[in-house]
Length: 368
Ligand code: NDP
Image (tube, rainbow, N blue to C red; front, side, top):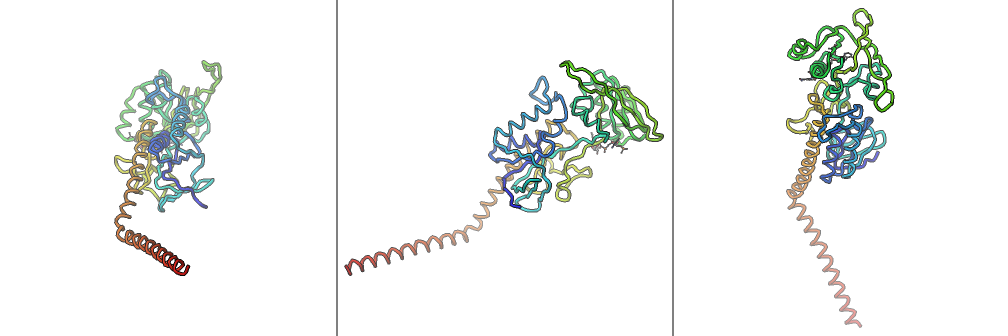
């Protein structure tokens, strides 16, 4: 399959990918951007975003991503809705294959993000998209549950951190965990266990999310969570827990399966980048956003690292060009000699032709 070549390819269109695209296209790198199966990334499954600077009244997640997309297009980024099925990073240029074609590039920015893990009961994911009171991000959505009773599922650092954060808003936070031992760090556990606004439900999983149809101020109707059906993991008994919101905090899955065995990553699959930069250990490959950050995971931090990746890629491409020129210069004597020989030969041939022409002209003149 013949491949089309681009100086820079960006994979992913969350805040990191779009920001990288905006910076790279303004730097005349004409990036090609692949938006994959979830254009706009995780923000397209949230509703209101109130903590992205510049929007004092807040902004809807999908609307924010649409603005970023239009901004990238305005500066000349090309965006393709194709899913990368294969990446080869051990060849130069790097080679990518999609379900529709093949592409090569001199530099690559990976901004494929991470996906929140859902409970696997279907309804949680649906309600998170429809504004039904389910979320996977306390920092994004905690504010909407001021004075309400909510639940958090999970027993790791994320769950306890999110639950503790949510006690600032909620009247009560119920932590639901499938065992009676938390996976979270001791310090995090101690803080959560001592928090008077928290209640712990051990040996419990969410079997179902019970909803009610409510009317919105706009006159529409929406399905909102009203309670959780909990199942005891020891005896299978069912119970009901009335809540207004559910936060699922059972981990994230970085979208890095394409790069397994090619790029260094931690146990959970997050890409390693060199400290203070977006460089991976393969020169010319950069990583930005949640795919390399399990700590902050915010739209604004992802956008910031997208900016860094574009600048790193631009510097890398300049360096490669300068190196290329230097290589030519280092070989200059040989190349110059060859070139000079060629020029001398051409001059010699032209002079010889002229002499022949002159002589034959003279002969004609003499003969004539
Ligand atoms: P973890 O994998 O550490 O924890 C996931 C939790 O969810 C576990 O308690 C697990 O239960 C539970 N779980 C998993 N699947 C299900 C399911 N289907 N139903 C119910 N419960 C489930 O993920 P985290 O996101 O918490 O943390 C990821 C990494 O990030 C960790 O290394 C963590 O230390 C780090 N981190 C650090 C922070 C910090 O230092 N401030 C903050 C947040 C994360 P079980 O225990 O039974 O397996």
